[in-house]
Image (cartoon, rainbow, N blue to C red; front, side, top):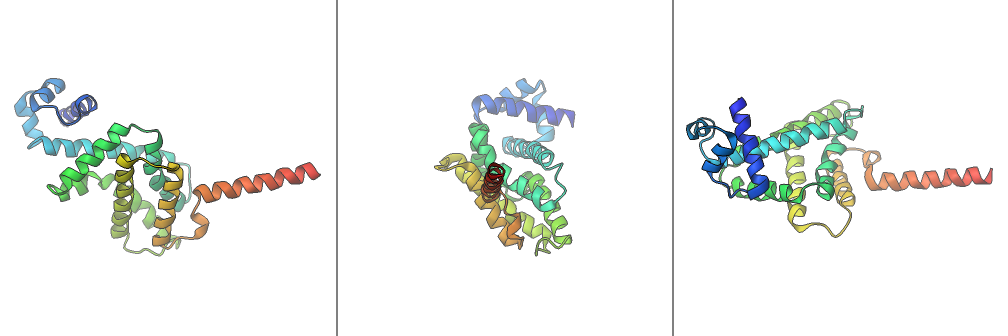
Length: 216
């Protein structure tokens, strides 16, 4: 597995410089392995790209989970996971986002099952929180696996579109609308919308409190 990890990491370094235009010979040189070692782990370049995408998504999911670690509420954690994917487009690496999007589209028609495996880390993350929220009576959904898959597809579609199209508005607003739509579909409470609406409410409350203190 150390060799497989070394191959994936070498591919990531080459992708950062050349995109997917690197050759297998360049890859084995970068990884410091023999060609036969590469084929021991990967039937071809497409399977390697799938492994790279899965590794990128897995690393992102570790970051998402860490961001929600201190939240006791599964609905709040789910909101963090859904919105952070889109918000990452504001300050992340645009080339990395476009790479994931372009290769996801290309490979989807060739290896639909394998693409599903590659994005499964995010689906599993969503599944865990939807099930926790459902068991707590916070959401209507009972088919947790299918619901998590649907949420993943919607989040990925939003990410893919804006990775190339950009945005003519704040990414936080786009993320908030995405979350509101997902929450509604899951049967969650409007009190869990959060995001821009909650930020505006908190600002208004702070303003009223400041005014009260001045009058006092």
